[in-house]
Length: 259
Image (cartoon, rainbow, N blue to C red; front, side, top):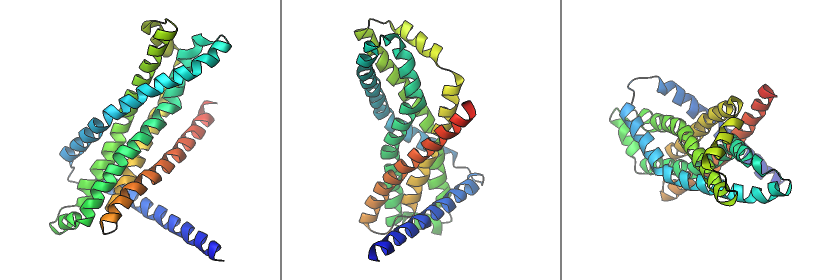
């Protein structure tokens, strides 16, 4: 009975949190179209999120391209299909590997940072002070960060995909004596709009999920320094789960429309 009761309590807490997150997201959409528009803060958040994550995304993308090509090349050699390497790598990275890996990196880098930053502001009563002074902290702190993550993640994904494909081309240039021009010609010949459009839309949802969960966990942080750490940690865990769910839904819907 105790086990059943604990499961019920966990499930109940999960549903409550989903409801609170939905209310938080609904408030975001309402506040987004209200004046004043914090355009300067939005640009500052875009610069901070993009600038801080750019190097990490570039290094990760480059390593993904190298490793994926090195691991796939022996298998393709056995079947005499090495010439298909550019097509296989580019489609795999652009459709799935690039977006989800970049989103997970940004969830750990950006999502945890937002959760810790807003959590520390809540614990030190800075958000309460903004409310007392007549400022709308939700508009200034939450809306700008969610919009920034929604806009910047697709840009980071495009950048990471390009670096990953370049890393793959470097391996082929060294191992297979394939010129960069020949490699990229085959890459662009193999790609279609059906590969790019669903992926692009998916990355916007990824960015929105990272910003929404990070802001939700930080804005509703419990008091105490332990609450700040819990907000940052739970933001990463919850966002990672949500990213896989969004990815599954996006792939399922894409297969329905393009099959």
